[in-house]
Structures are given as C-alpha cells and as structure tokens.
Image (cartoon, rainbow, N blue to C red; front, side):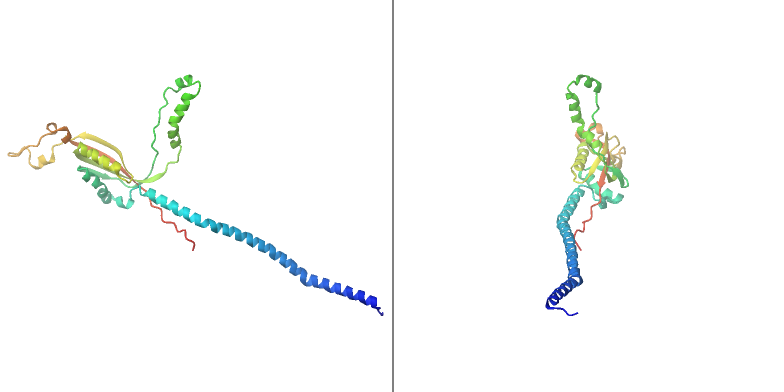
Length: 261
C-alpha cells in the first residue's frame, strides 16, 4: 500500500510517540521510581541521623551527671570508717587504742567483734499518744489533732522509710581512769569525723586496790600504803567504765568509665 504525504506524517508522529513511551517505560519510569525510593530512604536515614545526634548530644550531660554522682557518693563515704583500717582484731585495736591513750585511760579488757551486715535505723522520737479519747472529746475544731499530727510527722515519715544495710564492727572496752578522762574519751569519739558511735556504756566507782600498791608490796614491812578511794578528792577518784562501740563502714564506689571508646 502506497502512503501519501499526510499518512507518512501521521505515521511518523505515531512512531515518535511509541518510541517516547517505550523509552519512558524502559528507562525513565524505573529511574523515577528509583529516585522516589531513594528519597524515602534518605528521609528515613536523615530521621535516624537526627535521633543519633540527639542521643549523642545527651552523652556529655549524662557523663557529667555520672561523674557528679560519683563525686558526691565518694564524699559521703568519707564519713565512714575505712574497712581496711579496722579489718581484724590487731588493726581494730590499733585504731581504737588512740582514743584511750589520748584520754589517759588504762585499758583493762578489750573485745573485738566480727564485721557484719547490719541495718541502720533512723533516729526519731516516738511520741506516746496519751489521752487520745479525751482529746477527741475536746477537739471540736480539729486543732488538737492537727497539733499531734504535726508533732508526729517526722517520726511517722521516718518509720515508713526503707532501712538501709551497712557494715558494722563492734568493739568492747573496759577501762579505769578519772571521771574527767572517761568523759574525754566519750567526747573524742563524739567529735571524731568517721562513723564511730558509742552504743552503750556503764560507769562504776573503782573499788579494787591500786595496782601500784600491790606491786610495791602493800602490807609488807617498810612499805607505804596508798590512800584509798575514800581518802582522795572526788576529782581524783578512779572509775571503772565499760563501753560498747560500733564502727560503720561502706565500700567506696569505683570510678565509672564514662568515656566513649
């Protein structure tokens, strides 16, 4: 069939369109879809990048917070007795002996307890509610009950707190000395920076013979007896004291490694 000029033009246009469509579906459309997919991937990666950068920005403040917590914790542990200084009877005796020496007390007996885990209860006054029924009868405005609640608020709060556990070492001491020296011993422990606490003590007037009298052979011919307790001034009298002392220790927190590797 012979085509005229008009048909040739139309056929050329159709062929051109066909070629363009074929090129679009064969080349352009896949590339367009690939670009669209890459854009979505880029958006996802950029979102992940922003999240990572936000987390990285939090690292420095978190490191500083951890370091500050370690610093504060270390400062608190300084208030407790270093366990290495009192571990075993010999070290404990050396540690506690200086209090008796500085107080000029003569130690007659010492006992050393093992280090154990022990709860550390809170110290507070437990008020006894006296006449509660009478108070309720008179408390028409609730003022009396409000006053009682205020007085007991601290104790009620502390009684509900969780009690922590700590390492406790006990030391018992029997000693003899003047009353002022015994009080000095108690004062030295009270003012000591570390957690050393007198749990209990007893005090009795010294009734045994002075050991110097015994050593000099009191009662033998030519010996000079020492005055008895009743013959000396009150401030010079000897007293027997017995103390039970508790020493509290904790482990020091290791320095945290917060630097990124």
